[in-house]
Length: 104
Image (cartoon, rainbow, N blue to C red):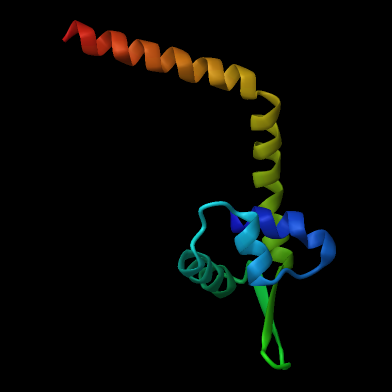
């Protein structure tokens, strides 16, 4: 989710942690920090610290990170395009499961 959000915010270049946190509902600061560190270790995001007071950190996708986002974006758009069908399928699975529980 963080890669996708960085991609969306990337039109403005780098993103600060506060912007990421506000853009992803229910994401805790601790989990965001942990995930950003992992993504940085995997070289999917780059962190830049500006030496001002107080210090400011910004994150941006690396070339590898942009490549990683491409299939995620394709899958996201496919899901959005087929949401109605997928929702109907989910309702069908729920009805089948409830029917199976009643048969036990």
